[in-house]
Length: 159
Image (cartoon, rainbow, N blue to C red; front, side):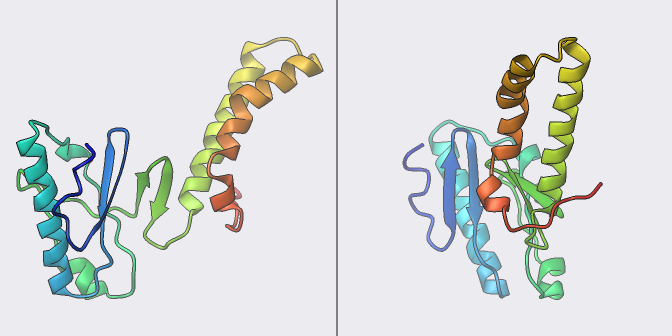
């Protein structure tokens, strides 16, 4: 995996465990071609290393004001499937949105934390402070703390 980025010229490639992302600021059609070329380079690397990507998991988030560029350009997987443009996609545990906010991510975190708190309250009949504190620190607080520095300046979800 250490050489997966060799040959990628214009794009930024990052990998963590079994996740890989390829990104490039695109302001014109030539840069779209450059991004597709870099994707094709990664696909060739996968083929030469006897590896396959799960094309069903390919996601693309588009940022910016140029609606015609966003609407008219397309990127493709190795198998020729069009990569879907989504309003938000997950990257290394954070949900990135096309409006460059973390609103969707914050709402997901709050929903997971509320769900876990509900599970704790339904599962454990004791309300002894030390037990509740241990459960909070072990099961709920890590959900809230993950990416907390990144999200510190964002507006919180009220729903």
